[in-house]
Structure formats: C-alpha cells, structure tokens
Image (cartoon, rainbow, N blue to C red; front, side, top):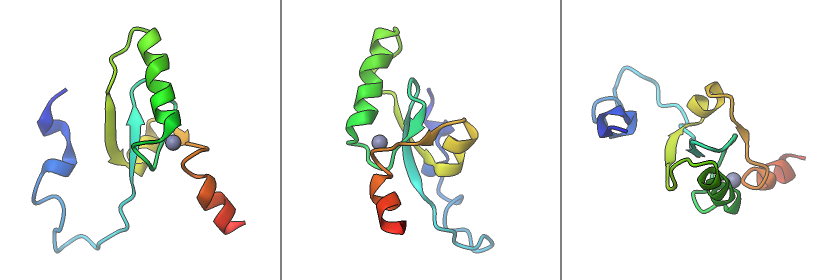
Length: 90
Ligand SMILES: [Zn+2]
C-alpha cells in the first residue's frame, strides 16, 4: 500500500474552484469486510477485522474512502453505523 494512492492526501484535488463542493461522505472500509462504516470505532468494523485475521489477512487495514468508492467495491452500509440514520428518516 502506497501513500500516494490516497486521493485525500493530494492537495489540489480538494478545494478546486472548478468543482462544485459536494457533500463528501467519508466511510471506513476494511479489506476483509463487506460493509462500509461511518464510524472508525464501529464494533462491527473491528469484528470484521478479527474475522479477517483468522482468514490470514492483515489486521489494521482500515481505509477511509469516499462512500461511492466503497459502493463501487460492492460494499453495503453497515447496519450498526447506519441504524441511527434509518431511525431518523423513518
Ligand atoms: Zn459500522
């Protein structure tokens, strides 16, 4: 994993005058998990981590990415992280 691979670290990419400021939702994903999370401290995120460890994958491989990136990767909303939102809109 390289540092330059992270678009969030590129100055210039964020705050460009040409692009309309969208509400960027950052989510957290882990390589072994099938969901994306709003909270880096989400217990499900860490539960997924321990499962990944048993599968021989690396631990602490949590990434912060744009929500669309996570969705493109086929991940679903974490039920735990999004439970408040669901409750709020219903
Ligand atoms: Zn979560």
